[in-house]
Length: 449
Image (tube, rainbow, N blue to C red; front, side):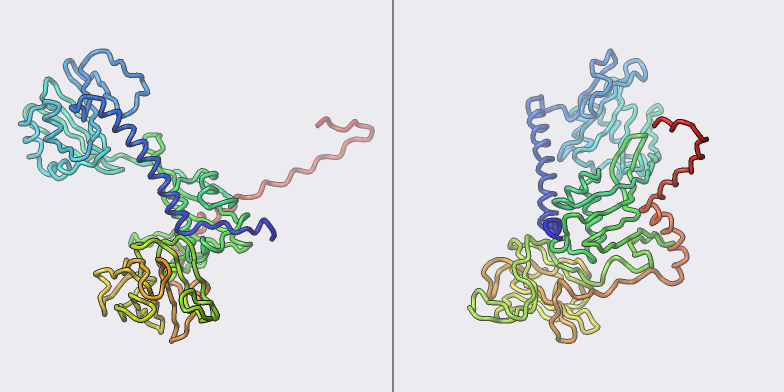
């Protein structure tokens, strides 16, 4: 395929790097905001605005005070919760009546909804001369606690905050990386990660991704009161990798469990992870004749080495039972997991073991069982990973992995009913052919175009 076939590596390091970039931007913005706050008096967990003319513009951000002229003398305060803030601390800072707080917390079911505040969340409080009149707190994406005062009593209600889900269809072509292509297609980072996770068992995004690969994804966008909040679940997606198309559709079973399946009902998830950690690069592949960098001789390398920092979590590749945990020769610290059906996975050069990975203990796919190190014969920190079937060493990167549980036969009709429209959305109908034009009468001039 020439230059078009250049591999575009987007493995575990790419995912982590992108996340670190996002988190870094957030940290910078947070630091700037904190610096701005430090220049203000330290009483303003909230900014109170009393009745009068508001000087804030109509589109003032939520971090500013909001003024509601609900009644004479009534003030509304918007509170941005800071780390270690409690309602008691907020009431004291705003010089609100602490007896009101005690009475509010005494309302049945209210205390549990108010005692644990999250940094960055917003509270709205209405008061008149320090006496609490009302309070609103979003306790989830879809529910709000609404407190009102009647005389000396408080009443609390949890009211629904309806969400609007809109289906969105996007298409992207890989040029440099999956994240760049996803961003160009308008996808949020978490949606790109979800896409990579869905296809991660069929496509090795560290080794197999090529320039010119493409994807189409149908997903939900979540709105509330007409305002976009975040991306939701992927409904269906297709990925074309090196000319091979893989499709997946989300299915919600009658019991509420959800998963991603191929159009014929086979689980996209496999019984084993292709790579049991987030790695920087593959430092050594499976080979029957590799020059050993320490022993200085040709020797079979019957696994794959994944370079990663010391302490990187290592996950159980599949469900199984810990067969061996200890030190074994050149492997250094070694963990073996027996998955049944003759399959054993091996994890070598570990720095330490997870407490739950005791000999004989049951482990689940994706559970942390150990941490990357460089014990034994190792020139740097990495995981040596092996996949054995009935004692035979197989290439972990190329072995056909067994499927996880497919859609139950009793649910196939329901699966097809749900998935038909979602899969069809990945292929918009072709434009109808142009209607045949009537023949021009003899001697007529051609129509202007």
